[in-house]
Amino acid sequence: MADEVVLLDFWPSMFGMRVRIALAEKGIKYEYKDEDLRNKSPLLLEMNPIHKKIPVLIHNGKPVCESLIIVQYIDEVWKDRCPLLPIDPYQRAHSRFWADFVDKKVIEVLMKISTTKGEEKEAGKMEFFEIFKILEGELGDKPYFGGGTFGFVDLSLIPYYSWFYAIETIGELNIEAECPKIVAWAKKCLQKETVAKTLPDQKKVYEYVEQMRKKFGND
Amino acid sequence: MAKEVVLLDFWPSMFGMRVRIALAEKGVKYEYKEEDLKNKSPLLLEMNPINKQIPVLIHNGKPVCESLIIVQYIDEVWNDKSPLLPSDPYQRAQARFWADFVDKKVYGASRKVGSTTGEEQEAGKKEFFEILKTLEVELGDKPYFGGETFGYVDLSFITFYSWFHAYEVLGNINIEAECPKIIAWAKRCLQKESVAKTLPDQKKVYEFAAQMRKRFVSE
Image 1 (cartoon, rainbow over the protein chains, first blue to last red):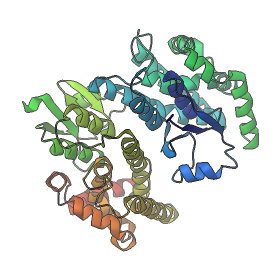
Image 2 (cartoon, rainbow over the protein chains, first blue to last red):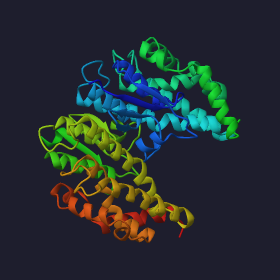
Image 3 (cartoon, each protein chain N blue to C red):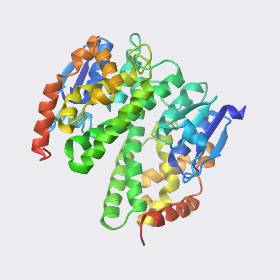
Image 4 (cartoon, rainbow over the protein chains, first blue to last red):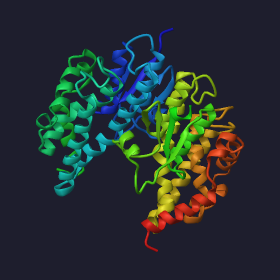
């Protein structure tokens, strides 16, 4: 019997995008359900009662929550093709460390830039570039964070690229000028069909962010 | 040779304790190096330049950082005995979810209980019990979070037990009265040699915590 796979998600979510890319990499057919986060569905509340957040992957009726946990689950279940994590335990630990770094650092600084003003915003912008320069250091001369092929760390970071136009406009920054290697890496990732088909249009994301900022009085 | 495995750590750290338990479970001989966190060693700064934090496991000269990432690494390298994570991908995803929940929620709330006063502390105490009660529900009637045997989630949470006496005194709370199942579970875990030998004496931890509190709270 075919696997039943459902993804509860929200189109601009970088976390949801990670799962969509992983599913595409593995060629898994699934049903996509877009959630209204101001009016969460009974299904979402039932499947993720602890955090009540997207993304949630529902595989044959059983939920898996937290984007990086979902991606590792996908990698382990559909292990016959396109490995996302390295085989070697040390390389795997290294990948997990950097995906965790992205998780811990990037969203927080994005929030700072989008929702604050004045000195706090300037501090956010400085922090943003510090974080991305560290990532450039880790990337080095490799085509991908994963080395020769697109992998777990690339997947965990690339969705943020769809937010770059929004961050640049709201933050008055030029990411390519400060971090050219990151932008070059992102464009390389976008040559992959799975990434290109998943990442939403940058202007669409900007319009969404602006809408949210107006709602919360941050503009 | 013990030199092959080195652990940079700090005795009261719940995060370091996780790694010590994992190494004990696997019977791995290692060299323990106590760090002075007010005066971090050049080795620590070299091995964890990004976060500059303990624990760091150094295996054959190569560092692994972040306690849960280290524990998974240990489980994968020394995979011939005492598995810490389940072998089924779905069970593994669930174990990762709950260890992540402990990471995201328990430390933050417990800090508020131990290091703040007034309204912030009261809010912290409420949060702390909500979190522990959520964990009690997840534990259910099972002897361990892992089911019949001590596993990844048990390991990720049991280390906080060594701080319970400190939270009780500093927060004026009674954890056993509110969450008897958690205490019963903790005492069960303490029957394991790897846990009993790793967790420091609760009074020693309280003295350390009281010292830290003086630094952060004006009395």
